[in-house]
Length: 310
Image 1 (cartoon, rainbow, N blue to C red):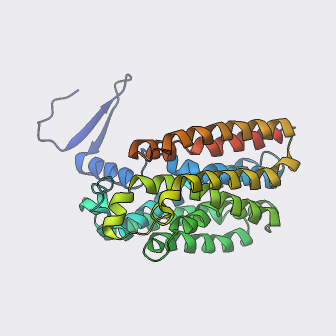
Image 2 (image 1 turned 135 degrees about the horizontal axis):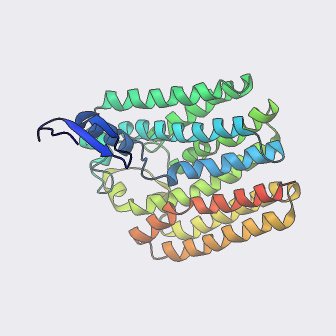
């Protein structure tokens, strides 16, 4: 490597081939902040959205939906979740500074200005919209409703006692959109699946809210963990049961029974494990249950995908 002064503002990455990639240090640092802002190092967030969306896509198509729709909904899910993180952090910046877990987020700490975060969120949302434009007119129109619910959620925490229900609708809107992309219309079962998925979101986001309950009480934030009080753990388990029951009711008749019930069994085992994690309401246990919840959705998706294989 040629000699460079120690103060030279570049970042080097060397490969075995001898090639050297150079990126200005300032740009590298900005990119790192953006990745932190969209939670790139925490894929559990977009996986929680992806598995029900892909499940609906497979059910609507009666099997593999094709590479086009798979790409649109996978990338669209990642982009919209990332955009949502930007909007959420801007909306919550004054609250987050009083919560130990969120005080150092880029917008809250001032490392990323509000306007910059909003621009990044808008760009990501526009990229997701560009993907939706490659589907059909009905799906494009429904995407505006999905965006409206996503924008409403950060502010629901100020007025709604169970804002996790609003998040549940936002996180479940990929289900009707998947049906719409396949059939140009939304079948009634898509809405039933959406309702079932809302209960899953209530379960895992209540676990998430249990982590910050003390801080949220102090700053006046409304969450399901606070609203449910000492009934939080039983309620989470009821939410899980309702979710699994509704999805089984809709899905089981449409796929190979052995595959679905195998996926259901794997999901149920995880639910029991999550109960053991949250029953004493420890921060670490509740956060671990939330962080690993995407495997519940993955188990059900696997049951659907296997059950629809020809």
